[in-house]
Image: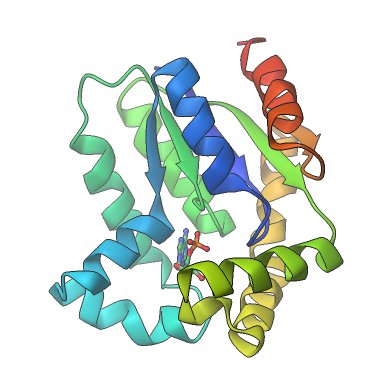
Amino acid sequence: MLNFVLFGPPGAGKGTQSQKLIDQYQLIHISTGDLFRAHIKNQSPLGQRVSELIADGQLVPDEITIAMLEEEVDKNPGAKGFIFDGFPRTVPQAAALDEFLESKGSSIAGVIALDVDQEELTKRIAQRQLETGRVDDQADKLQKRIDEYFSKTIHVLPYYEAQNKLSKVNGIGKIDDIFAELCAVVDKY
Ligand code: AMP
């Protein structure tokens, strides 16, 4: 299996670029944010447990998120590989993912971090809020999500850097130019 993590703060373009990557490389896309939103929409017990946290812009506890992610991977036993989008967001999640993949004789091949400055992120999310109405894209919740990113999620980068798996790609510019840079990284594997 060829597994990648697409990493970046809210609004970095992870969803957009993941879509293009799965078309190009026939990988399975797993976005923990999309999975949580589906649970909330379906009012599943998990959805009911996490909806307030998510609406408020906080991270969902690790054990809940890890269990959901592992279940989703297990639904795709024949996969060529996965693109993990929005996961891992904490160091314990990254360690759990390593352990889980190792138990399947697999691993993370590479981590691609989309680099976008805060001003641009705020602009993009304000636009997305208008288009989708996502409550957690509202300004006060967004600030909380950005704070979660810079207090907890950012530490995932040195975790992968220590494993020599981290590549940074400039996330500002034309979508297709950014995609070409991402492909150049993926094609190295
Ligand atoms: P996203 O669509 O990736 O921005 O995720 C939306 C929200 O879902 C986040 O703000 C968190 O509340 C929750 N979430 C998604 N992925 C994770 C994760 N890996 N760990 C904890 N919470 C998550």
